[in-house]
Length: 469
Image (cartoon, rainbow, N blue to C red):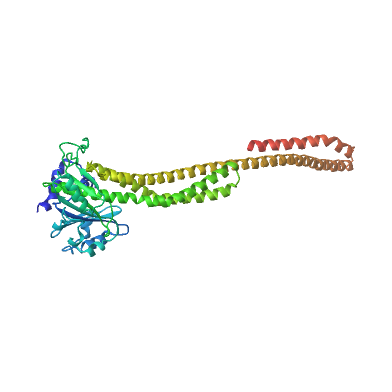
């Protein structure tokens, strides 16, 4: 009943505030979206992260329904991308992220798999059958068996020997977690440390080999003293598992970068050839344009296909650095820390991805600049052609004007001829009527007058046309 009344009470209590933004509650509760588990030691955590491309939330819900007593699980319970199911003797946690989904099973560590064991079999004692794990929808990207045990950290030499034996006797990567970052590690010859291992204040050890076992899992071991709180154990497990997941997700950009490298080299060589042809004008503009458009299309396609992967790689790499910082680790003499091992192996790969992404972006910019150069060259050629065409038009207009003037002169002569002929016929008519007139002499005398009158009339017509325009 309290839950049913909570919305009404909240509405009453919020009379002091304007209406909430539609996203306020969701954004406010985001900080609590994925709380760390409470883990009681000794514990075994089996963790599987799968790529969820093409995997719907309904398919993941259907898989979770196969858990004991979860046949009625509703898809709406997965809307928050986080679900923790407390079952009989173990806990299952489901988390969906943008590219991957994580499944974690937390259960007590079998007694025979404790710190004194040598590479113990952990899968045979799992609370869930192998078939349930194999049927998780998606493709495996990370799988870890994390054992968390209690042991005092004082007997460092004995503890290290037991931990190495537990992990199979091979070289391990180990860190003392939770130490003060400003405190330098004690030297191995510290007189108060009779076991030869430095032990500044820290809350636990984390050891792993970063090796995939025959069963497809990696193994990690956390050793914490008695009295370690369940919330601290949960935070340690979350950081280690997230660290490994983000490391593998970050590395997904490396094969892409390697595959793209020869294509970039080919595109750069093609662009260099186009630029050289632009410089010495050895190819026509149309040929260069066709080649450049094809190259630009290939570069833009590569950018569209890989830009997200490169951006995601950088984001995951940033998260890896954050999780390493959160470990607050110190070196245990004779071993590399998790952060040191990971950074030495991961940094070159991330540098390769970053360089490839920068190379692709630079190539795109260079193609754009070359396009501008070619466009400028085409514009200049077009302007030259336009200038030549204009000169031809001007020359044609001048010729036409001269021809028009000639035609106008001929027209004046023709009109004058017809006028004089009319005057001659008029004079002959007057002579026939008995007037004392010589038609030929009169017509000859009027020729200059008629020519001037026709020319003057033509000029007036031109003047009127000019004014009207």
